[in-house]
Image (cartoon, rainbow, N blue to C red):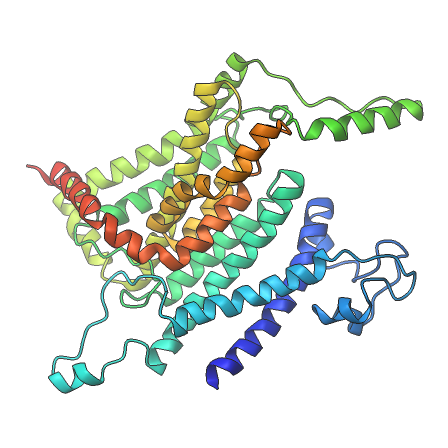
Length: 430
């Protein structure tokens, strides 16, 4: 009965969030952040302001029979579908996390009661555990909503508004700083006793801040300052706008810039310069904290605080996830002479990594190609277009990894532990 009540509440909450996501998907790419607040909900055809009963998630569209109450203009079925989908996702993840026990991993195992009677009566999901898990569940559902909005925008416009992943990253950093404990599933506390992973996180974060400052000062040049090469999907829209301008006697809009493969490779090298400070910062901070005893002792003492290891774990997740996608973009572009992936995907995984951590986000990146393989093959066979919006597939892979990372991590654990031990021996060798 308790689970049923929670499911009803979460579906209603999710459907309401889905109604807001409809606003985000339509307005954010067209009018920016301010357009999410004003004007109030209205019919795009007759501009009549909608009443509260018209905005009831899912049921409002059904009651109106899919048409505006005031002008009878058809209302897209996408609105109730997104509302229903969002509500269903919140219920689905609740059932998986709290009923079927398919949930994120904890950095450290939950200690078992020492006596035999305690072990018999012990249940890993008592009500106290459920209360502790609610913040992580809420954070994950927040990320799901962000991914849904970003995916719908990317699928329609081949762009991801950067405010979405950066807002997700900020919330992820804040929540993990406030609530992370090593025994809570989904926490990102860095528990290795050497302090190497925490040093990587802090050095990389400081290097990223330095890169941003140097970029703002103009000391790191911008890649593709006139815009990235135009996409095939943009050509029909450009041609239509040019024809309309010609009919009206106006100047045609500027055509998207065209680059040769050698020019594209030259531009992408500027992004390599942006990555150097974070990479060097991570390396230098690891060497300093591992090889200099006056720094190593206070550094390890600081890592006794759960809020700090949670913050650094979230930061490490953001950096590793973004770096993984960015390296794929750079290497693919250098290899093929055309932009391999959009920078929006880099920002998207930055937000994902800050919420779910480095390991799950890297696994999600490598699963994503299999998610989009069938659609990609279909487009290749039909020769409709070569570009593929990658954000939806990264989002689908992330949604799957939220549930199934634990068995994947257990399968990969022996190899990863061997690699970590090799690196630790390398840095701690006298």
